[in-house]
Image 1 (cartoon, one colour):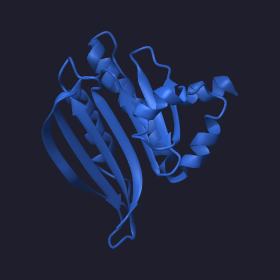
Image 2 (cartoon, one colour; image 1 turned 180 degrees about the vertical axis):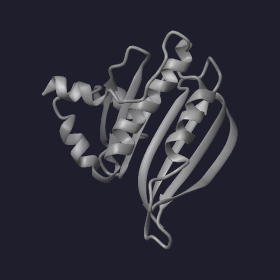
Image 3 (cartoon, rainbow, N blue to C red; image 1 turned 45 degrees about the vertical axis):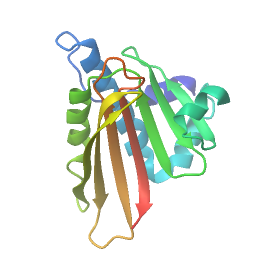
Image 4 (spheres, one colour; image 1 turned 120 degrees about the vertical axis):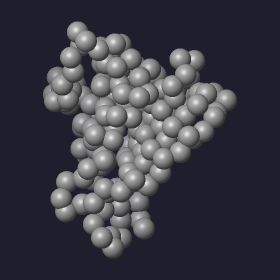
Length: 181
């Protein structure tokens, strides 16, 4: 079971490690983890939680920073390219992946590649593209895309926030949620 669950963290996103920098490889790993965990399981986050039940979780005092004060669980995601965390708040329908280090430009390119075009019959729409200056992470960039059918009562919202500063506490945060319109 453990081998199966760990293999779930690996996806088919290919990377050419001989030509890519560490930051680019971290961005690729981030995109892979985001796609294989959050995007793939968005319609059944409780099922994802059940699959992860035997995986080691972060202790509550460390999980809290990834859950924005909400109850829930956070797991370290093993990857040779960096430090990643999956967070699933228990009182919200949201999945989040954090990357300590990742090339912001590459992470954004890969994110747009994942969510910029939706599978039919869904329509993808850019919902947000904002830049800000923060104390903890320096300059940040947030991009959100919605997937829905026309006049839908619910939409899938995919969001990425990146920080390009080498001193940023986190350089990438991706979230996926289903929201009521």
